[in-house]
Image (cartoon, rainbow, N blue to C red; front, side, top):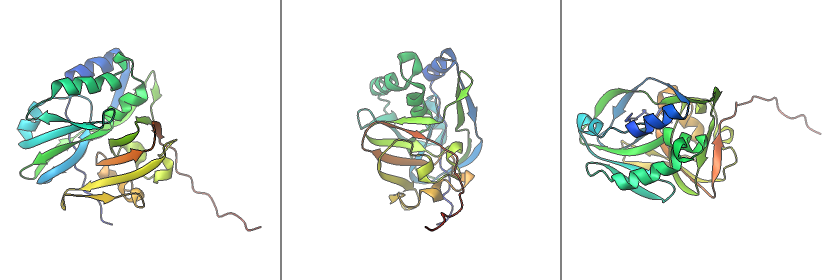
Length: 225
């Protein structure tokens, strides 16, 4: 399997930034080069939302996904602000959400439709630090969740990030063929290359749970009886 070209986008919401500061959360970022392909791209959604970024990119449309209601929210060109603000109620610490729920927002992905290819520099979240502690847990809700590859996942197989989740299905988006690809058996290919940081994927879980990254271990073979 060839390297997957990372396709991600950073866009920011002033409201979210205010909440981050007041909640005492620090963010560390990666810097990656991005190529958005013609057609639909499944890309990283960081923290703040500025609709102007879609105009600057020349995007035709953009959608977020609300995992709590299992429905799309249009971000551009017709911003469904009421739906988006309702979604933020579940994932903003100032509104009572857990840090793990907020991590699901910071490491989520959105759909962006492009009429032509576009290159730019992106800065997806690398680490989330709350009260001096790194957060390596991402809360998922029953059903579909839209996520992205982050630094903590690199070099780890699915078994080292699934935490207490029962993952029923997992797919990544191939922008060249404009189709989903089953990643259940080949997830380690998604997390093999740092160039894939920020790449979007979707995962379906049987119940609410937490993804947790654990260090990959290399153990010698078990001695026969």
